[in-house]
Image: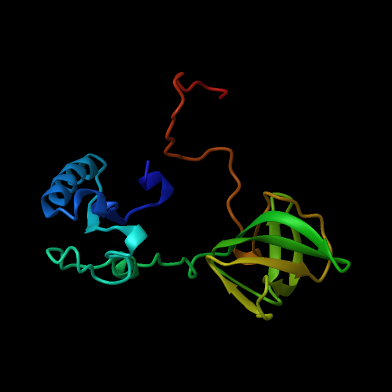
Amino acid sequence: MLSLLGIKQVVVVVNKMDLVDFSEKRFREIEREYRKFLVDLTLEARAFIPAAANQGENVARASMKMKWYCAATVLEALDALETKRTDVDLPLRFCVQDVYRFDGRRIIAGRIETGKLRVGDQLVFSPANKSSVVATIERWNVSANDLAIAGDSVGVTLSEQIFVERGYVASHESETPIETNRFHADLFWIVREPLRVGH
């Protein structure tokens, strides 16, 4: 299930250590049990950290009550995680989440899944195959910028108003997505009844 959510890195925090008097023995028991559990999920924890969050023990600073633990604090372990590489070098795919009207303008809001988007780019919106040029790139509470990249959630205005709705995908004219009625998917079915055609 975690891999379906895109989770590849795991840090396990064993909280409430104050309830077991900061016992190293109890922490190691829990660590062994959860390491076995994670193996069944084909995951490996980057770190196991004993903590008492309500007291700040091993959260931002090393705990004086658990001197037997000499590795990273929770914040240090989180900072050490590898950041996900964004897909800026792939073709542009801007997924439309909604269209808003402000000050007489239509702002097409969405997320750039891959690629780069610049003011002046000619976009094609699929599946309607309507095209227009990016007039502005809008961001909430951020100064205007002429560039947006993969991972950014932005709004765009167009030089020519065309009908665009939620679910459309914008791309550059030279790299439009392939339209098909067949595709491959890995499906995780969590309903008691078996999956059938037509579900």
